[in-house]
Amino acid sequence: MNVHILNGGKRNMKKTYKIEVDCANCANKMEEAAKKTAGVKDAVVNFMTLKMIVEFEDGADVKETMAAVLKNCKAVEDDCEIYL
Image (cartoon, rainbow, N blue to C red; front, side, top):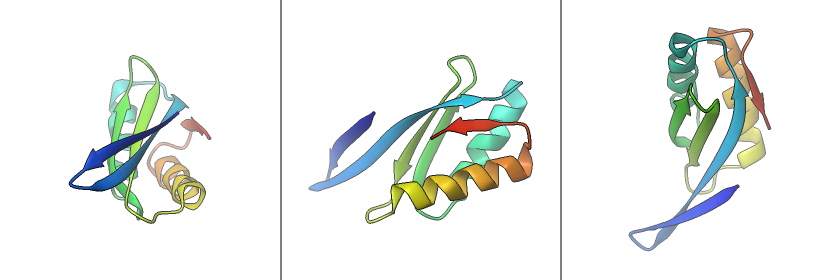
């Protein structure tokens, strides 16, 4: 799902991804790892719905950014999954 939000004349892309994670603490680790990834403006992980919403920086390559997000998330929680 792609969502564009008009923000001060600029459009920001947000995408929602299905995730697999075992506990709420692990979901928090994934969220923090995603937020620290280059190309990510913001990220929210919802453990109850098993979804991650990622807002991308302007000009970010979504596929490359999400590959980096997955790598960073697996570094902090190796058995997590993001369905790209």
